[in-house]
Length: 503
Ligand code: FAD
Image 1 (cartoon, protein in one colour):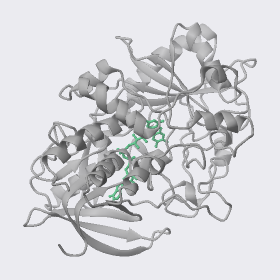
Image 2 (tube, rainbow, N blue to C red; image 1 turned 180 degrees about the vertical axis):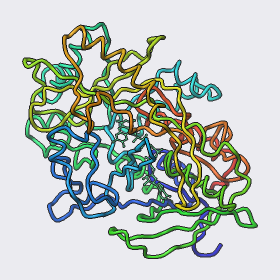
Image 3 (cartoon, rainbow, N blue to C red; image 1 turned 90 degrees about the vertical axis):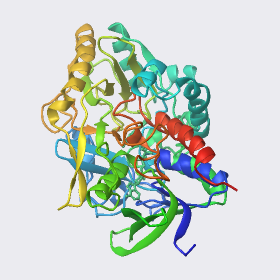
């Protein structure tokens, strides 16, 4: 084969992509990963890799002129949002009319910016969401494998009960329990032992220094330290950064041709390169992979793609809200950036809600309790291709978020009533109590069994696969990366056994 050809190409370096590249590399298949963001392994002049949430700089965001933290108007966040120089930073907010989607950019994708909550979904709900997937096999083999590979760990209960870092979570737990709700500890890929030593002052602070959405300088087992390190360790995987795939077409011999736009860290286009692959895996995330296939279908470069492309997108029912605490219920000035507890009412047949108790890591007493609720919102969005802008546009109306609000409101009205507390109306830019105009958990667009077969093979094409969150039809009932990882493990095992010639 000519230069620029590869047996396997994986687009993206998030969860689905990282799993796929490791398993291909371990099977001896030379694999190239293409990532539009940069590699985050080198300290800048200030000695840190990532910028802090309280004093963000250009490293914080993907080509923005101002940081766009989700709490738009909380007094300290207003001060913390900064004008920045456009740069290939780590967090992107992609705006689609009434819905803004936060995603990670860089080697590791969402793992660089997320809250590290590593939650395996309730089995009954997984069976409902993906009924054609063998749940026995998932819960016996692939969920345990995913958690082991990701480095999922559990907070020490005794430390949790006495530490300063989770006083905010204990205050929220007390309020929830008073209203008859149960809470559940949330496993994490942030190293809780490191966090304990942060609080003791033994190591540099990260989770306890308000680091999370713009990257963690310490403590977090992001994909570059787990799956991607293992993938590179096979000697068969290479990662090309600042390389955005723009177009996909199929050649006469059945292989795929990619056009890849290379940029520098300031966004200057260095050139468009061509690359070909026998097997092509899309791991560019729900937004990224869906856009690539929509563009390919509607511009005619992959004309056999069907109507299912761009369907079945959801927000995982995300809705954020805050409660105002009584003056004596101090949450403290130290809040871990990594949540460790959730209010778990997912088994409630009438109103299932899983509300993670989120920090407001402002470094000062806030008298506020923040929550990111995951609800069972049945609304789904669809994408269409806009030829003028050459992008996929999400069709999602603000009122489609209303079921999420209604569900969260039922839970938190009760918590407020029993505790004599109220909502915070000053968090989201106006006076609303519930924020459902953004999501951290985009899911769907290329749904398993619809746009693809039951193992992620794209319908209408051979050797073309989807590996990421776009396979999941809009909801998992918990934070999604463990589900994405486990499903990718399951799918690539089958694809390696049946489709790929290995050495
Ligand atoms: P992603 O992780 O999104 O990776 C896609 C990658 O592809 C990115 O690196 C992107 O830059 C790259 N890419 C996109 N398009 C192209 C292209 N055309 N060419 C080349 N590269 C491309 N989930 C949890 O389970 N627990 C949490 O605590 C949690 N907290 C979160 C907090 C925040 C702030 C955010 C934003 C998300 C959070 N999530 C959390 C969600 C989780 O991170 C995502 O569900 C997960 O990362 C999705 O994985 P993925 O494999 O689908 O794709």
